[in-house]
Amino acid sequence: AVCRRWHLLISEPGFSRRFRRYHRGNLPIIGFYDRNPPYLSFVPALEGPDRIPPGRLSWQCQREEGPDLSTFGCRDGLVLVHVKHLEPLKRHVLVWDPITGEQHNPGIPPGFDTGKRFNGAVFRSAGDADHFQVVLVGNGDNQLPVASVYSSETDVWSNLFSTSLPLKYYTDPFPSFIGLSLEPAVLVRNSLHWLLGAGSVGILEFDLERHNLVVIGVPVHVGAGCHIGSNDRFSIIRAEDGGLGFLSLSDFNVQLWKRKTEYDGVASWVMEKIIELDKLLKIPLDRKNQRKNTTRVMGFAEDNNTVFMWTIIGIITIHLESLQFKTLPGSRIFSYYYPFESVWCM
Image (tube, rainbow, N blue to C red; front, side, top):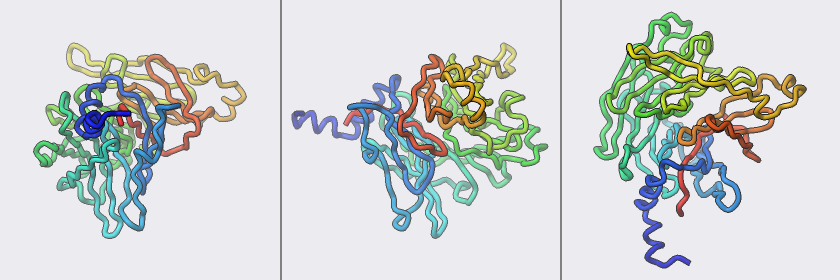
């Protein structure tokens, strides 16, 4: 039994936020969300007594009663929800705390209220358990990348930040920024990163301090000729030194790259390691030959440096430093996994 005083303390939403903030450096993957609307379905990942009932952190909205709900990603115990009303067509975003049930509606900034595709991310500043920020990225009127930042402290969206594209994007058969992916952003140091593709795969980087938006190329032979439809073979990751990393998948080989900046300021990609999945997972040769091209990247948990993959033995997670892996028993095959990394304190 818990005394009334302690019960009131731990039931207060502010306690939950501070508790998660205190344990931020050691957050388990307690589950994940699917991308597909109209629901936000939580799938637990923990086992035994720590396993959270699916309905506890799910948000269901009947299609005939409300809008379609999908997620742009999870971070710091928050979920950035994309809300799409079908009749009339209208969109905005919500910030949702699944553990406390709190919701915040920042609306949507000018330039993002059209029918064009956009993506976004939510995060808390270091040491701030009460406020959060949202970054949305999308296509501007001239089809170039734009971004806007919302602060819950000021309740205001910023003006649009924009950038040009590298020359190669103007010579691609699918020009400009039409290939913004729906994969969630990865926070590396002080920048958010999204996958994009416009004839070639690339990375959109937004610096959270400088509010600087740039496009970064990927390793040359990886991105050549790859369109956004094939991005289940790629993922932005954190390199072992904490910098920007990139994962590319070819059959049963996983290549891990890191972005290295030389003394003259020129940055390039360097191969960090190769993971041979067939050897790691001990896949028999006959099964390997039968199901050669079924491996897919399904998600990335940035705080745990863990990738979700669909393989011939099922859905697995691999820790990219230790190479420890485990299967997720009973997991359904989603289009993408949005890991929810948090501590469970209720």
